[in-house]
Length: 172
Image (cartoon, rainbow, N blue to C red; front, side, top):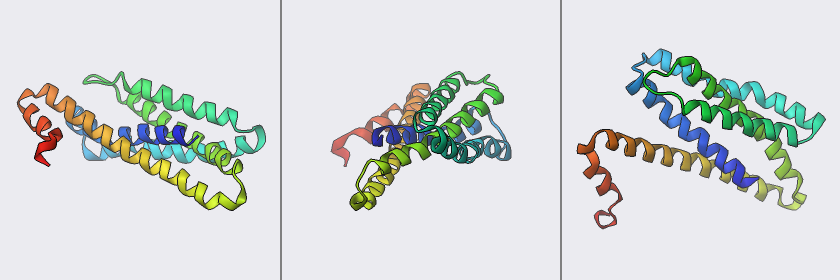
């Protein structure tokens, strides 16, 4: 479950990093509209987290875990269809599903992890669970930034040398 938590936060933070660039530089949205569209991620999270906890308490872990990961998958899939002509509806639904899926997944995942360890190591387990989220956030931002730089340089070949120098170990 640590790995799944790690990967879900990696996806969410890559999306959180890349979405403002897309909305600003590709769609040329005014800052207020772009900000409003991005807020659907935390809105989705806050809407589904308590529902997920309630479902977990009454039905067990499987249903909210499956629903949450399915929503993240569908939301990510929808975001693959946005481009220069992509609609705000598809973008908004994709972002909302990612946020909702993370919210639906987090509560039962935490409950599952914490219920399977002895009380004597709850603090350590909580720390490792938090570390998996933090590492996922860091990797998501790193991979999102790497993808952004890569595609920026693919579409602007004159910048390719800068990207190569960034990864040249001899310049460090």
